[in-house]
Every structure is written in structure tokens, then in C-alpha cells.
Length: 173
Image 1 (cartoon, rainbow, N blue to C red):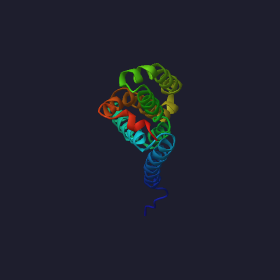
Image 2: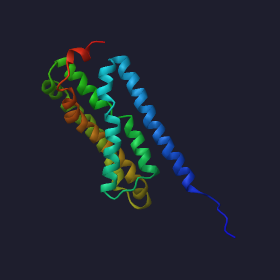
Image 3: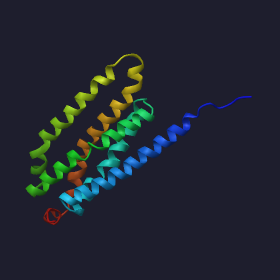
Image 4: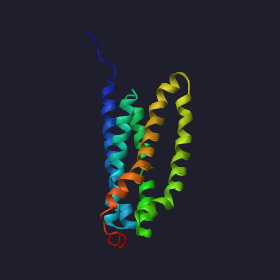
């Protein structure tokens, strides 16, 4: 007697598969582009920012009561394109300076201003009213969290990873 007219779970499954595909393709492309401009070792220190930012975004969304839905997945996917900027700049500066603290200090203001500019663009979305707020807040939170977690990775985790590495070997192509 009942007939299913539409099954939105199929759309959600395909969106999850698309997000997973974007995640994998993002890692692969980031690896090859970074390898092309620098080298394999350099790329291997940049790649972890992608799963790190996805992890941070999903955790933050859960902690703030936002659902992980189609819109938030789109926000995470958009954020993936921006998260490699800070670690690439930081790693390059560290390698050029041959000193972690000096390298980070040289680029911390430019990285912070870049991240804050992007955050400022997405913050007004969270102050929309009605249905638009419900629809787009998850998107904005996802992008903002991805980018902020990228900055955190660049300023804390990346220097820790590079601490015991011969920076001379990484800089040679």
C-alpha cells in the first residue's frame, strides 16, 4: 500500500562517496604537486594536514551540535583545497632558514593574516536568519575549522615532525 517515491539515503551515500573520493584525490594531487615543486620527503610532511583538518572539522562539528550532513561535507571538501597552503609555506620557510623557530617566525604573520581573511569571509554566514542559517552554518563552520586546524598543524605539529629531520636532505631535489 505504501510506495517509496524518493529515497534521500541514496543521495547521501553518493555524497559520502564523492567526499571520500575528493579526499583521496586531494591527497594524491597534493602529493604530486608538492613533489613536483619540492621533493617526496617534503610532500610527506605536508600531506598529513589533509586528514588532520578533516578530523578536526568533524570533531568540532560534533562537539558544537552541528550534524555531519551534505552541506558540512561540502564545506570540508571546499576547505581541503585551502588547508595545504599554511604547511607548505611553513615547511618551505623552515627548510630555507635551516631553523624551525626562525622559519616559523618568518611566515607566522602572513599565514595568520591569510587564514583570518578567509575566516572573516565565512563568519557572516553564521549570522544569517531562518532557513539560510540552518542550511549554511555547517558549511561555514566546516571551512573555518578546516583552515584553522591547518594553521594549528603548521605552527605546532609540522615543526615537531621536522625537529629530528636533516633539513638539508629535504631541501635537495
